[in-house]
Image 1 (cartoon, rainbow, N blue to C red):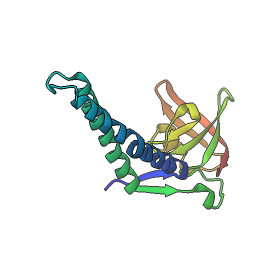
Image 2: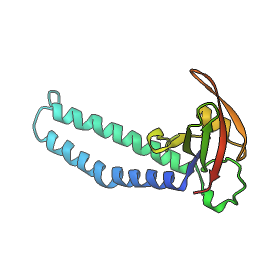
Image 3: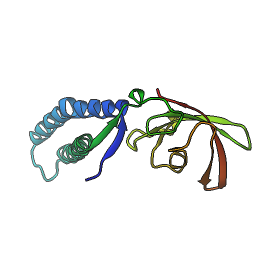
Length: 158
């Protein structure tokens, strides 16, 4: 059985999506299917088939979310003593050793990852290089353009 690490915020977002799908989307789709069924011949009823297809996708997503939440390991990094070590859920500021450009990432579960929001998956190459290291350490990340060195400037438990 696969365990899914996620932050408190990630678990909350999945719970909210599940509630929306089960309380809003599912009933609307049932209503749409009923309305389309009343239009007559189901063999040539595009609205009916589209609604059924959408229902199948929504039900699959509901099952996926339920499975992930059931097997989730929710980690609240704010309850862990700050040690300067990069762990799941921490926010890390790193600086490119060549260019001095700095970026900040939060290391999250794969469902939560969104590079635009500065959230990277714990399974990403950069997160794998960072986890277990301390503030001040220099890590080497293998990128498509070659090896890049980063210094860990700051680790925050937010």
